[in-house]
Length: 231
Image 1 (cartoon, helix red, strand yellow):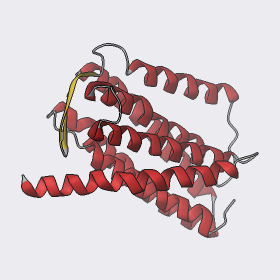
Image 2 (tube, rainbow, N blue to C red):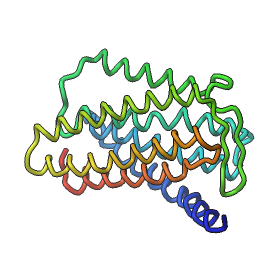
Image 3 (cartoon, rainbow, N blue to C red):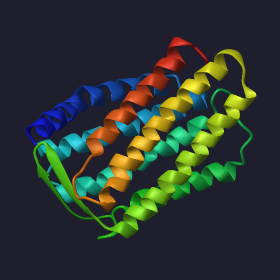
């Protein structure tokens, strides 16, 4: 248990520089986003990543009057937007795909509904508590299943888009897409296991691990976008 305390304390305190870095990355991307859907959508994904980490910090350090249960609900509501905007990013990288505007509108509407549904009483989180550096969540399997299914659908479509682009690309873009697919697969599988499926078996919260893996992958993709100047 002492070892776990050390590990989770490190992950928790790492949220501070990671959140600051994410806000900075998001600012840089969104400043360049005018007329550029790649920067806009990836920038928004990074921004919601930063907000997700901020919610975690607020939960542990009690900077607000909200309960741990509310912070758990807010975590669900915010985190789904990371994958939503990453999906839209995959429709534009390395080049825009032909897509019906109603399809994009549907994704926005569906994500908005899923995000708001987190606040329906008892649907997602029935109780939450913090015992530094650990968190515990009692999750309603119905709400968790709804969220997990939607998360999986977005993830599959995003990965399919990347694979489709990989098949049609060559040279530098093909290499970059291969790396992005590998990173995306790691982040998606990690979050499915530690941030969602985990709750079917235990109330012990492993979101910090999911956040760390997602942040690492987003920074990796960010470095690809900038160091290779693909846009």
